[in-house]
Length: 230
Image (cartoon, rainbow, N blue to C red):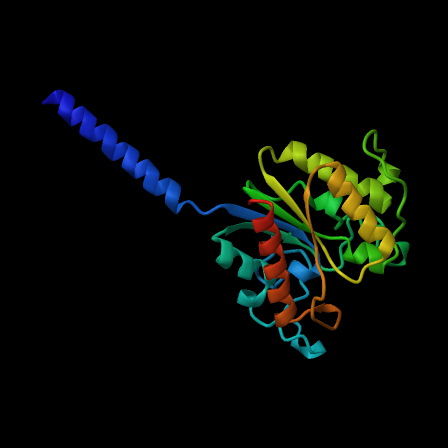
């Protein structure tokens, strides 16, 4: 009788663990710029948010319309942290060659919680601000190197792979950026074997994804993840 009770208890425990495993929804974090912001949904809350922006004609007015909210619902993710900052560059050089080290991706990459997957959606402002490209550099970075896109992006990916162990990284690359930045970001992702989604044909209003554009981003990211077996 005691043996039967023990067996039943083990089976019940296994069934419970199986149900928990089936119910688990992966946590995702976002390291991004204005394209991933929404007032009240960025952390830290001192980060500048671009969305919603009805006054400039952008029709993405609800958080449910953002690319990451659409993607989370579609793939069953839960949001861990959205550390996005409007106008931020990957490197420490921003618009008008100003020092953006207080908001850059390489500064904020340390604060993303404990997710299962991280989406890095950046490079747009580096392209628009014409930040220095620099040379490809994959080790021995110095402080001054981080003011240039290529070494800063490599430093960021290298750090994140070591900091967020067993966490999947996916870089999302905007369309209509400079050829130099697009090819550089693609090459750096290839070097580190990081998934890279090259967006195409994204509908935009005031330079930012519209509701249609947000859906396109979610669709293209989801399709890429399916292709690579995520």
